[in-house]
Image 1: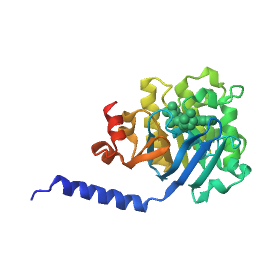
Image 2: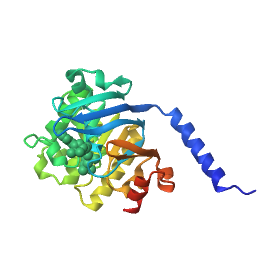
Image 3: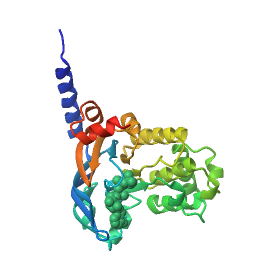
Length: 278
Ligand SMILES: Nc1ncnc2c1ncn2[C@@H]1O[C@H](COP(=O)(O)OP(=O)(O)OP(=O)(O)O)[C@@H](O)[C@H]1O
Ligand code: NI
């Protein structure tokens, strides 16, 4: 019996579709638009996107296509005086666009966590790693003292950091970039976030550390069921760990789908260009 390529592909597509329908979405963005006032630019233009439990969704596109703006809009990090937004951002069943600034702060760092390109700047330079991590644990887990410290040590281990006891007493400047990024991941874990938004989390790190951090993220989403929205310029990274890909250009999503389908059959000319240029 011979099975044609088309039949195989059709079957793969069906099983993806079936699987996708069964996994609940943590993040569902519906027709989100964001315009900055000065200079006037529609940085995000009617974008719809979904991140499911335990999935890594990659957002790719050229510089200035609106990736970071979209990423920052989710946890409400954009300055409200400088932009206008329309559309819906559903996180774990709540439309974040309808929350007050105060309610949004509560979501930030509990349901959604974010890591950035420059992890050293994301940490508070004058507080020890222990203070920053234990503070997060106290706030989200309602535990104190020795118990909070034990959880802090656990999260540092899970984020792949050696000698966590010693690390707790250190300040951010005493750590390498890769270690700072792991501390940020430990803080995200400690907060119990269901969604992690990672905006070029490894761009500033050297190649071996990049690979380790990505492996760490890959393992964590399996263990915790955390959904990850990963912004990257690196299509090699996308091929390696992403499940779905959204391609952004000029504020719009020009193409999206399962990573295998996008790589095997890019439909949009821009996606083909991206794949060829790597
Ligand atoms: N605070 C701001 N005020 C005005 N315009 C902004 C602001 N932030 C971003 N922009 C504009 O919005 C558009 C999208 O920028 P954004 O940083 O989201 O792109 P990006 O895809 O993340 O790019 P990169 O890959 O270089 O990080 C650009 O035209 C940018 O100049
Ligand atoms: Ni960006």
